[in-house]
Length: 207
Length: 199
Image: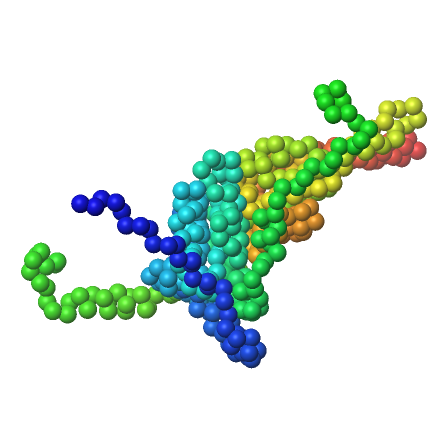
């Protein structure tokens, strides 16, 4: 009996999501405005509730704050049907691959709100060995909502901010090939300045 | 009475129950806060954002050292003032160069506000400062100073509370001055009477 496993299939390149047809450039400006208007007020939200901030998210979805008024619909069956991911809570290094994977499953155009200090940049766990210092290290974030936890109204204000951003954006710019911010993040180490020729190199000049 | 388990109830009773809930809810007032149109009424002690009253700050660094998140950045330099009187000692004081709070990191514990010995930090109930860039969440001193305009007045004292020390001292001084003036006036008046009696 042949126990050798089947040879692994050649690695398929991931489908390229960032490609626009020529129609995107040819589309008239009113059409873009209408499309942006539609995206803006139909944000099917996918809640990544990881800690106590998720409670505030739930409060914002309930009848007192009720973000369905703003067009944010919390009934997405999964990431494949969602437009907006709200990461509310502490992203641990163990959870980070799942966050990234579910983000990649969302259809374009997709938006991310980072809700609370933990997902902004680690928050109280800034010195922890196991917490990702900000969800923006793994996925791009559109709006950061500060607070620990933020009020439900703060989430509503973050959603309004995101809606303004969606109204301004154009798909051509959104799917532009290179972003300077990524370049800045992945740039190499800064080389230290060369020592001055007069100063010696050794332990003698440290005093 | 609930139907026994296993025995189905009257057909349509579930529908009637659901509609009864709908009817009951329909007659109640709505509880939804209309946030973007109507701002919420927050109590003055709400922990929204930290405001800096930089005139009171002496750069003692207590807030930056006590912050559990190390989210306060303070830079300062020392200035030497000439002596007030000739032959006196030169006085040095710290001048604030930079005061920044990173609100993406802040955990809103309020320890900085509690330890501030000169009341330079205050809570403000403002919460509308979500940003699209995380760098904008580090509020520099001018922005922190602007939050100061949103700080509510401190809550009133209890009716039976002890008087604040400053007000008590001022009131005592004023009473003492008034009593002295009264005594002087009475003294003057009696002396006038005496003078009139002598005449």
